[in-house]
Structure formats: structure tokens, C-alpha cells
Length: 465
Ligand SMILES: [Zn+2]
Image (cartoon, rainbow, N blue to C red; front, side):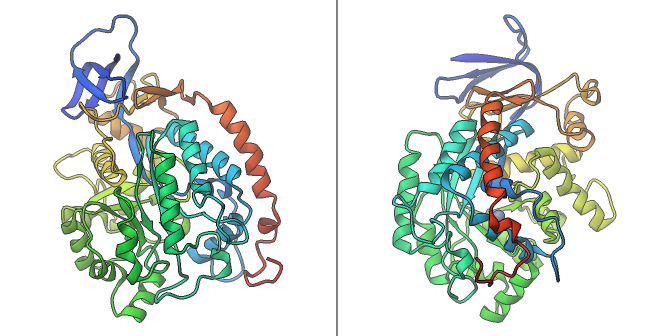
């Protein structure tokens, strides 16, 4: 048992001053006391519950910045996906692990203390399974252990290239599994995480990649949360309508029992009736505003959905940029640009920053399926501390601290971070950053220099690949 002392903290009972948080030997919060004095120095000035990152593809951090170059024809999510497919062909297990470890260290330094890893890169370069089908997934698990971030691992089932069970194309060979092999993959993940406090869930990739027939069965292969990409692109909804006569989210609700175990990632292109269905189901919508902006996906109707009582959280998705405050800021700014208005997310909580933080921590915790996102007994001791010496935060109190941090700070204000009571960030830097960065840098360069990226402007069907 140890105690951490903070001058002020956002607890489950609101903002409190002079707070002691007791952490038990399992890394859970056992007690909170207010109005206390530390035996020596404070452990930090402004303490917040760590934010859950509900959607990440860790290895994609290695291609960040490589798809910002106009390709011939229409540049869109689909052309970005071609670059990603080429990058994927160069990634070995040790590279995936090293790149992902650095991504996780960056998440921790930005204020995310846990991550839901939507892991779909499973097979060898020729498309055959590794001897252990969970070889690549274990790379992500090792990355989380190395960085010390809380993990919800979501092994992805991927079988088809389009609605109606279309054959996967050759560029998808590293993602594709039979049901039997996928079952072995999930078992491998569960075995690898048996001694951790992490959770294994399941991710049917999308309604393009998973047939309706397999959807429910696949979703039952683990007890943790179920995540799915849905309605990210207008073209995807159109294809779904053509094939099934239903919009994507309608088809999903028609095909499986959607409840609070589910996280619908993006849900960008939805009708009001679809938003109402999601809100009633208790599922979380996973929003990734920085990636959605980067990919030109479109804008989710945040105001409408929250008005229906919907639940949301945020994720870093492609990891083009890893920043908790950027995700929250752009969640609100996208809506301001759309509605030509301000403080869109505010309701009974008047502060936009407090409202964004409130939704992201609760929705994120639900989507990760772990006891996180709140400073109260029985939750993991996942705590972030902001630097009070940051000039902009120096004279703020209560919710205005969140407003200022999210909207008015450059993103270097996280001073220290504890995950499960273990300190992983000190003075704004991950405690193992030098080692993780060195290892990742070598692997990162190895991936980026492969022929697959230097030849990225050739069509995918080229026999050169
Ligand atoms: Zn994604």
C-alpha cells in the first residue's frame, strides 16, 4: 500500500483539494482522503484520471507522415489505404512491437493511460499463418508491457474484401483468417495476457470484411468488448445499401444483438434513426477526430447523438498524431466549424473542456472493458498530473483547468503519469523513453526504407508487388 498526494484532483466526487490517493498492491485505488497534508513533498499539483484511448492501430505510427503526398486521381481514405497496405507488407513482428511501444510511450506522455488495440496484422508476408497465430498480437502485448500502458487487446477477424463475402484481395493477405485459425489466435492472446490486468475482446473488422453469417459467432469468441469499424465512409454506406438494401448501421443492428459491450468505431455517416438505435443500445461510439480529419472521413453528428443520450469516447486510430488534447479539441472544433457556433458539447456541465473529458473517460472506460477512467476506490490507479508551472494553467481552478489545458495549451503539460500505481512518466518524459525510442527508431527506418513505400505510386495490381 502506498499513498500519492496531490494539491488538487478531479475525483469521482468532483474537484477536491489536498488529496491523498491510497493504492493497494494490485495497483487499484483503495481510498481517497481530502484536506490532508503530505508527509514530505506533493507528488503533483493537478491530478486527473488517465484517459482511455479506445481505438488504435499501433503499427500505423510507423507510416505517419508518409501518406500526405498527393497521388494521381482522387485522394481519399481509399488511396491512403493503399499506402497502408504497402507499409504493412514490410512489418515484421519485432518491428510491429518496437513501433507500437513508442506509440504507447507517446500516448502515456500525452495523457492516455490505457489503449484498445484494434489488431489486424496477423500473418506472414506471404499470407500464411505464423507457427503461433498470435505471434504479431504478442508483439502488441509486449509493446504494452514495455511502455506500461493498460491494454484491451482486440484481435481482428478479417475474411473478405467487400460486402457479400467477396474474396479478399492479395494486399489483405496478412489480415485474413479462417474461423479455426482465428480461434487459435484468440486463445494465444488470452494465454499471453493471463497474468496481466489487461482484457482480450474481439473485433470483427467491418461489415465489408466479415460476413453476416460469421458476425455473431466471431463476437462470442472472447468475453471482453466487441469493436467494429462502421460507416466511416459514405462510399461504404452506399455499397452496403446496394448489396443489402440497408444502411451499414441498420444492417449491423439487424444482424447482431448490439448492446453496451459494443463499440462502434466512427459511425460517421448515419441517419438520425441509426443514431437513435445506437443511443438506445448503450453501445459506445468511438470517435477519432484527428484521424477522421486526416483521412477526410466526414463529421459525426455529436450534438444530435449526445442529445439522444448517446455515449462516446475518443481514439487515436491511425496514430498520425498522438495527443489526448488534440483529439478532444478537434472533437469540439469540428462541430463548431460545422454548426458555426461555439461550446457545442456543453449541456448541464457548462464547461466544454469538462464535458469533453467527462464523456471521453466514461465512454472510453466502457469501451475498454476495464475499471478505469475515474479516481475512486476499486478503479485502477491511472493518474495523470499536469504541470501547474505552465503559465496558462498557473491561476486556473476547477473545470477552467480542463478548458485551458484542452483549448489553450500546446500539449506539453503532462508532467507525471501513473498506471496501476506505477509511475511511467516523470518530468514529461516516459521513464524508458530513450531505450524505447532507440529500438523503435531502428525498426522504423527499416520499415520506411522498404521497396513497398518507395514504389508507392505504382498501382496495387502491379506484378512488382
Ligand atoms: Zn481504425
